[in-house]
Length: 64
Image (tube, rainbow, N blue to C red; front, side, top):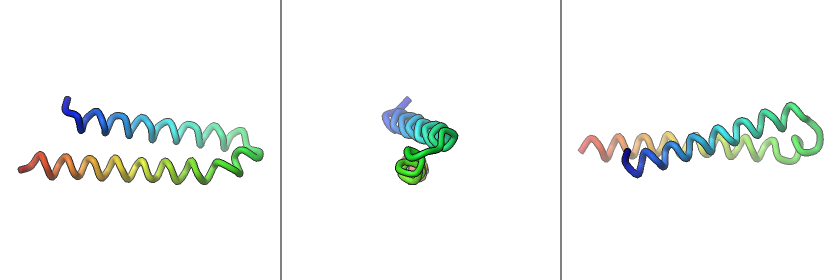
């Protein structure tokens, strides 16, 4: 595996962690959900964007 593969796996695991934390927080409800729910969703979407960007970058650089 190349260095880029490790970065993608790490970003995917971080995305999964943000997703699980958001679902658990939403299930618990309360003030913590109100305070951190949107931030966790924004973090998850940002991490997903980074994964897609890294995949595109690796595809572009690998096709040369």
